[in-house]
Length: 312
Figure 1 (tube, rainbow, N blue to C red):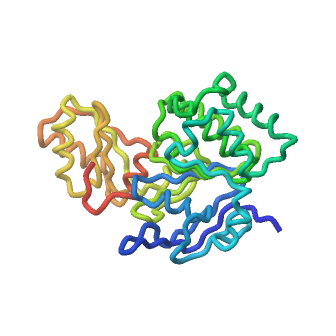
Figure 2: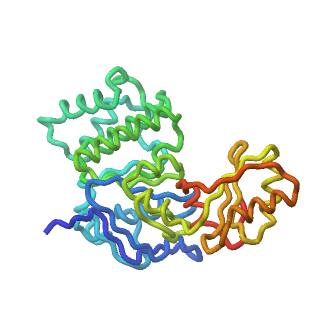
């Protein structure tokens, strides 16, 4: 019986010598959704993806991907998944068409439909006019589209994307995500790692990783609703002085400056957080306005990854 989850992992861990890159990770990724991994470099995102596609053997724990045990049956799994790495991994001395043709041969795509499938992808990802261009001469956004076309050529049920937009401009990132939503709408499950907050907000669900540990998961809205923090926005004539004054408060978990505004995180166990901030500003003769506001995903990330008595 087909599971409603494309990925199920329990206690998944990976040890490299003294380094525990991933620790006791539990994961449930529903089919047909875009599931995000949010975390800084070194948080375990890439290691987890490599374990899920069978490239790395877990030190501990179990995982089932598309109802297939990994790494035990990863050979059977590989034709059913697409994998796009952070770095461009295609052949720079081959043309766009030759790269697609090579991938089609690797996946033993039926010869009878191969040409039409490649033509379809060239049109869909705006690569038709670059058909004969060497991949090594393409821009970052163009390479990204080619890499995605190659990753989905064989109609994978699951697409694993490891920070796919880290080297492209904002417009290319926006276009890339439109393609991802189109794929998810067609039934493809997508697991994408990122360190961009705006991308994380686009995911149906996401997990936040920190030093190999999953510290939060849920829909973006669910995460924003349960930060465990009061969020206070401060607008001051001298934001640096205001930040210094607020930072002295023991109750304050984090102060972050965004232009002329400050975002202050105070645990929700604290009564009257607005008055606390206002008193600190008044004591330092700092003119400012304050207001309670709703959490952003960046606030969530700060709240769940910061160390005791942290500052931004």
